[in-house]
Image (cartoon, rainbow, N blue to C red; front, side, top):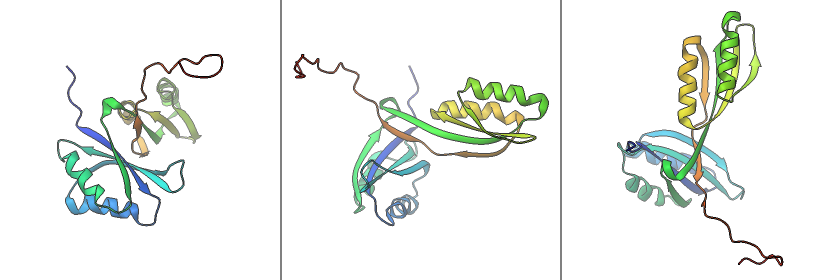
Length: 177
């Protein structure tokens, strides 16, 4: 039996207005809630932005956070995304030491993890990798012995997993059966 996850992602749809992110992050600060990860971007509808907030469920009650968030005027919808019910991804960029005798090994690891080299210097490589947070953690651990000069991660973005049931079959006239 798998251990229960210690985090959960809240996907918060908010009106795309000045100060909304400050109010959301201020709520977390005032209540002493810790944010593991925070990612914000506009949606396909310019009136709204989506804030993905990853919280530690052992430290904070999801129910308590959602109640507090709904009190904020510009919050439109909150979706709780349990890790087993969501597709989560993150972007990592790192500048890694790659002396000539190590460069081949670093390049090989970047390839194994389906990353890309985005900049090359005399003694360093800057790499980019996107994927599940655990994959990025593993990559980061493997790069540490080479020497990480700089590291930046975006924070998790997530959407609910899609329904895997078969779509209705279409007849020749294009109507569902």
